[in-house]
Amino acid sequence: MRTHPFLLLLLAAAPAAAQQSDKLDPIKAPTSPAAYAIGVQPSAILQPKSYTALETALYSNFRNGSGGFGLPSDFALEFSPYWAKDRGLSLQEYLFAAPGRQFTRNSSFSIATTPGFALSGNDATAAVGIGWRTSIHFADQNDKKELKAYADSLALLQRLSAGIKVYAETIADTANNKNAFLQLMQPIVETRLRSLKIANPGATAAAMISKARTEVTADLKNDRDNFVDQFYASLDTYAGVAGVVDRYQDYIRNRYGFSIDLAYAGMVSFPNNDFEYSFAPKHSLWITPSYHFDKGARWLKLLGVFRYERLDRGYYSRFFPGTPVFTNNLDYGIALNGNFRKLSFQLEGVGRASGTEVEAGTDANGNRLYRKESRSDFQYIGSFTYRVTDGIALTYQLGNKFAPITNPLQTLVSLLSLNFGFGGPKRTDVKGLGAP
Image (cartoon, rainbow, N blue to C red; front, side):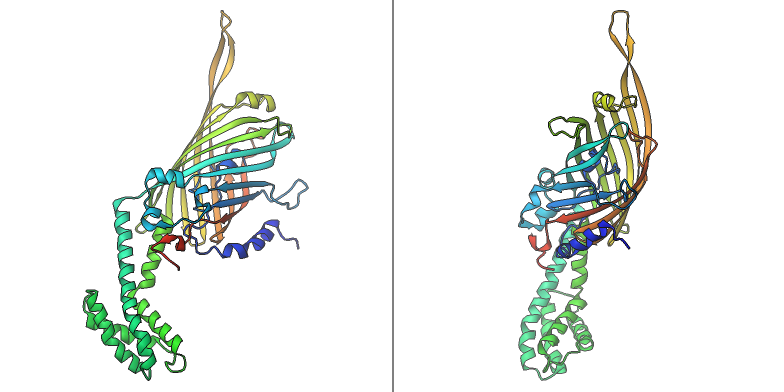
């Protein structure tokens, strides 16, 4: 039984990527502007990039020319200069930076290569895509209020625990058994609750001690450290520390609300596979607004796209003779993106309006005359991603893409890609979060 090369790469990279599980922004499905420019990525809607210093993506259509499985020949790399070094950002600065600062901080540059860019007939040549993009998130006042409430709750719970734990260590060394320890701790817990102005401190302290009496099972005399750890864990569980931290981390990772992405991509073609003989026949500009729902639909994101693409008719007329080429192309569409823990999907539908001017002869004075031609097209693609770790994602895309210039009837999308992310911010890099 033969193992697919993608699986070998996945197994080889998993140990290193597993160490990145503390990422604030896990890897997403690969959507590189440069990869789109050379045609290896059919999706027209770019998902916002994760905050990683370096991303690489490998693309495979499963089979090589002889009909067997082959190594991926199409490759993309994306680099974010800002995240290439550790940043001691405050939580406010990380989440609510001004749009101008976000424009610079979130800028990334991409490059993609393929040896199989098709020319007319059966010829293929090398092509390189280059790209840039950035993302700007617009937080509203409710975002800031909610985050402040999380921070205040967490700080209160931490002060509660810290005040109690100072005494717990000493009492654990003097008490003879669990009951004696808990009896001595109850008035200390009540005093701490009262100092923090928590309602009903007496009843709350009694409930916390009663819960600890049930949950702490270690023996105080023979297993003192484990006993104290269980007592701390019981207090934290009652106070809801874990729940506050989880909501805090969820908000930081998912960035609910409105964002807008800007991107550019261009292609460089080498028709003779000669580095000194090249053309730049394709340029694309994106505006991608997105909205991440909150309050009951946190798994759902709505994305749109407006993209302008310009093709060089001189290049395509020369290397694709007899093929209709439209100079100006405007794409517009929407996508739904769902995220369920490690599994996510994106369903997109995008229309295209194409137009160009072609020569229609000359007038009586010998001046060239032109006529306008137009065409419309539509593509629909489903993307399904499994995030193996916070630094590795495996994506499969299936659907119907825009008709290509060569072989316009071949519009089937069946693409497997593997994405790796390296570097980027972790919880310990943002002041106010600390270690997990």
